[in-house]
Image (cartoon, rainbow, N blue to C red; front, side, top):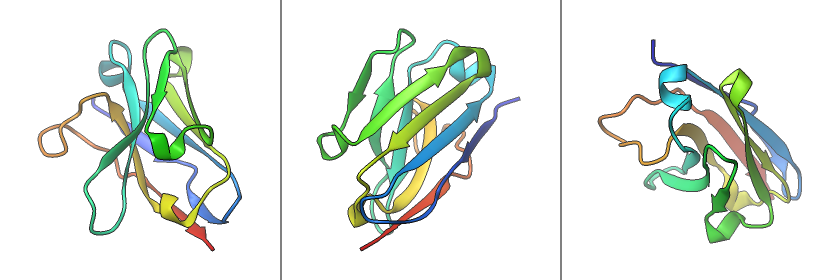
Length: 117
């Protein structure tokens, strides 16, 4: 069964921190690089962080130095530690395999992150 369950979002003031978690089914997690994506209102879904099976990570420039992606292979879980949050980080955050199609691949419900100024 395909499953992606994101959690950990919420409302936080600018400068605050949140830690997102995503539990993925083995069919998605075990053989794939994983990523965290976000979608702000009226904008396309954007990849913000990715991690390989050997824990090599990459980030979009706007979150470098503030966000950290990690994975626990024993728990089929990927995390996103978000520090120094900004209002422009406000979005629904999703996890999925790297390269997942926004239209043809399965997506979870996401978790809302709202950063107030």
